[in-house]
Image 1 (tube, one colour):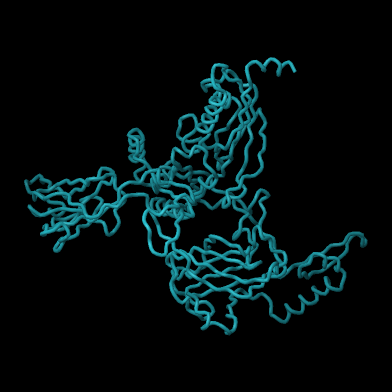
Image 2: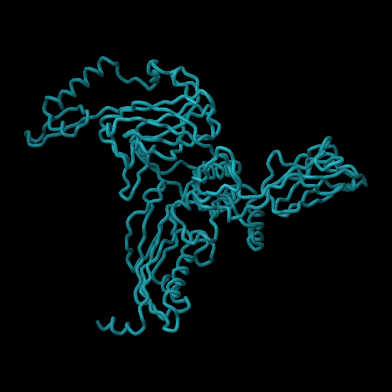
Length: 601
């Protein structure tokens, strides 16, 4: 933990400012002092009402009828640095902070201008740190801050001190803290920093990666007959990807199954093309659970070439362990895992703070045939837009769909066309079929998946190509309907079927005309709505329909903006980077006998 006594009473660390000096300090001080006087006691005193430190210059034009002011305010840098003597990677730490209540002037407690970061020794750079809970609202009152530390922190030197470092710094940069909330606001700047009286740290938990699976320990597979091309099968396919410690073992059984002395581990390979007769290699088909040893092929001259070593006759073959299970049922939402299957000392509770991703069911045969044709065509190289889409979908089981689009235009001064060779790939995450109405949080892709896809594409792209991986801009669609149900049918059941039909049709992964996801750039019109609703059993006819859309205004918080009703004649027309998704629809069932009176009234 933090050695408070060792650090207590020492001077504040001096952080080296290595920014470029564009003006000597004396000249800068004189000019700033003169321009501060303009606001404090000169011709711009009215600006004192702003309540911020300002400096600048005034002037007049047009015979003194128009006045102007050009000024600036200081760029304040305030932060808290914490250095730990021990490596706290994958720990959850709690900071107990004693602060002056509401000491920070201008600090918005709903979105404090504060960001926590951790120093990675491998990169020598600061990276964002996950905040689990903050009851101090940015050190604006006494409370607790819980932080989930990542793995691989490593020691680094800050201000001459070697430790495992984290920090909290204050910023209003939109790059650090993107717009949040229905109004899309960034944090408000502050005039006075918070006052922190004391801070103590303690470890309150930890984080570990987890998979939805069952673990099979050592499993005997059979006895070798000494022939090439032997095939063994595990008992419980399909298998999750073998980990480094999970491999094939060959040896003699002892007096007990636990007697493994003399067993030799073999190495997994993708194929035997580079294997020689002395290489202890095997291949593994994780879908079927087949373990294969190398074949022997007869050459044209009659000689035989053995690709890979063959276990001697009579030796036992086993697998040290493997994981079985997986599938989309493991893609649970955040804070879903809450039950301990067995008790552990000092463990009070468990949860998953982020959604689980990566689970995928066995591929359907028709989809496998289609993918085989695609693989033969692209030959594992990313050249065309279709190549990037197919390969991105193969890069990770967490990818449900991929779309290659034009890169974004550059912004700022001199903005124009994007750099030549830039390719932008939009990723839709894999979702379980049970997620019929995905939330914004369900459609997020993690940084890990984005890096995985980018790395996979970088290995297969042309040398002059630059790959960007991002998410689509989702437009959440809701439909207001007034329908007349068949009087012989239950009205609530009819409304439920209409709801399900629209949810399925507008699903970004399983919707659309072909059931493979709502197409990019495809418009949604009232005619589409009428066609879908009219096909539902029990709907007599449709009286009125209205389509509204809501954009995502805060991806991190999953907040949607206000609904906008679209014109009936145009419908929803998404851009190239936008994709439709369904939200809750409002369906009103009107009795058949009241239709005439409504129309007449």
